[in-house]
Image 1 (cartoon, rainbow, N blue to C red):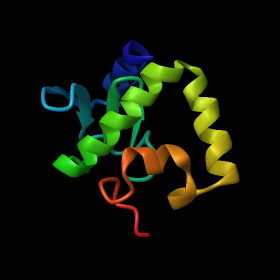
Image 2: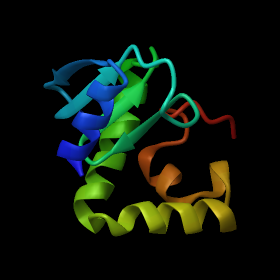
Image 3: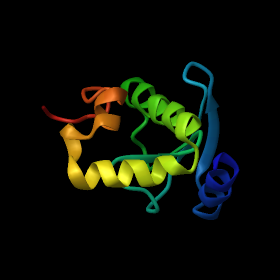
Image 4: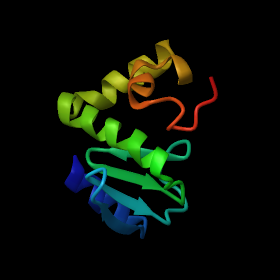
Length: 104
C-alpha cells in the first residue's frame, strides 16, 4: 500500500519527505485527496499542512496498524468508524485522540 500511496500523493503533486523520528513518509501540500486533517495509507501520511509532531506521532500509529492488518485495515477501520465514529473508534483511541486533534 505504501507504494500505491506514494504514487497517489505524486499524482496530487504532494511534497514528499521521510520523517525519521516516526518512520513515516509525509506527503504535504495536497489540496484534496485525503480525509479530515489528513489520512495515512500504508506508511504514507497525506495532508495539506497538518504536520505537527503530535499529529505525526498519531499517524505513525496508523501506519503501524496498516503494517499489522495489511490491506484489510482499510475495511476494519471503515467498519469501526461506522459503528463507533470519531472519538469512540478503537483505532483512533489506540493512535491517541489528543495527538490526533480529537476533542474528548
